[in-house]
Length: 189
Ligand code: 5GP
Image 1 (cartoon, rainbow, N blue to C red):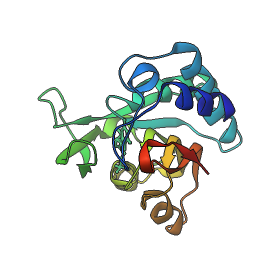
Image 2: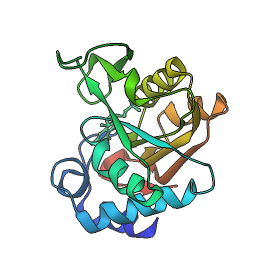
Image 3: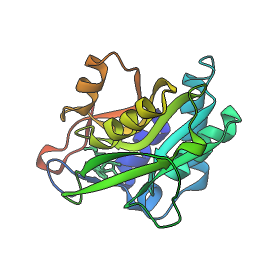
């Protein structure tokens, strides 16, 4: 997605050889027009797959997931971190290691919002080692819903998550893939 590459080139900050900061348009401040375009692009790639629900993880995935879900005309469910007391009844949960925070969190979804009849599209902002996506895949598995695929805004191709998920036969669509962040330079695939 050329518009997104351009935005990353102009506003992305290379924090280290493995971390890209995009706080000015995706992870802290949000660029609404760009987010809507990202949502449209992801929705377009899965428009013929009978998606009934978009699943993401709080907080950074929500804006993009909402934009895609509006196009697909389906609800968004976001997994909550560190099970709040308001989350009651049957829940699905998975342990996720956060790449950026270097900590483990349990993510949870109420069984009310994922049914075996659902066809689920997982969406997240970044794909690095794949822990967040794998946690969401595990939640879909527990719900016995059908996983349609995973839509990612920025995949870091030099980290193993994308390959591992694809090796499991999961369809992963990334709008841009970063090949390298070495020497402070952003290189796309
Ligand atoms: P993974 O679970 O695939 O290792 O990492 C994905 C999650 O970690 C995403 O939900 C995202 O919030 C965060 N993340 C991973 N790499 C980066 C990065 O380079 N920059 C930012 N801003 N977030 C990242």
